[in-house]
Image (cartoon, rainbow, N blue to C red):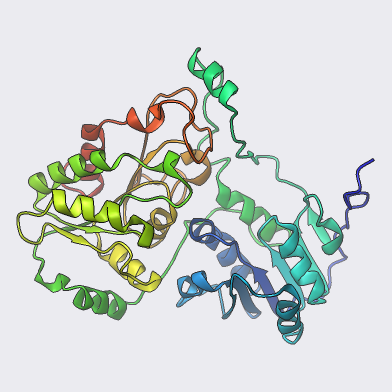
Length: 383
């Protein structure tokens, strides 16, 4: 017999007065956080007068500056103790907590904080910490990793089923469904982030971009999840070189410290004419990244956090997809024609693995010229 605390799932309490102080437990990753913004905006629409506080990792705190759905952010460090966090939350006297992650710890945090109403998805090892454990929505699609044997079977034959219906399975609906448990509208909105014009100008001056006269394009060759999400660097170089010749653009290369080597390699390959490329990998804060992405006419990127940030700021995105699914985690609102999401016909994709166990055909199969055409179209240089 299982010892998991699943014997009883709490039922929704009877409706009471609207909450005055709401705590939302944020997701932990940049791209996921951006995909929660439609739910947060719907929550704000349902409770316009409430104080909505976000509990978020400190690395994501700058993301929420200027966001109209949030009044305040409480941040926590990676090594912050559970009981210290609970004491801090308890002092705030929240009426209600909405728990967006599926982890047991995130539900335990708000239980220890003694928040009277605690809403989140019903998942193993955490339902007793919630006062309302929400069942998975009907259209939910699990991102299940494929085994090596399954991958080999798939590439040996034509798959029987196609991808999920565009829009119906996207991750933004998961968060909207949770907000709807509080009476908020489940209708999707595009993810939205905000930067002020003076932030954009400050970033432009800091990195010397006022010298640039032509169009500015962004390039993001990394992906923190793993190499199975990274289009090969040599293909990024080939595409960026061709696009630079055709448009006389300047490339801004983005990424974290781990992407510095790839950024240097790309910079060395596209070093002329003057101002053809700025390697900013590992050199920007999160707010500076946001400001510079807002400045770009288009972002060529892997499926990663900055892809979602760019789309939420209104910048068109071109993204090769390999081990992941654009139907589940594509940028922006599903079906937005500004974004070009490119994948090969590899039968084993999406596998949701961090590393390819065979020959990386999903991303190797995406041709450079196909990406070049998509970037030119997204940037508005061709029709």
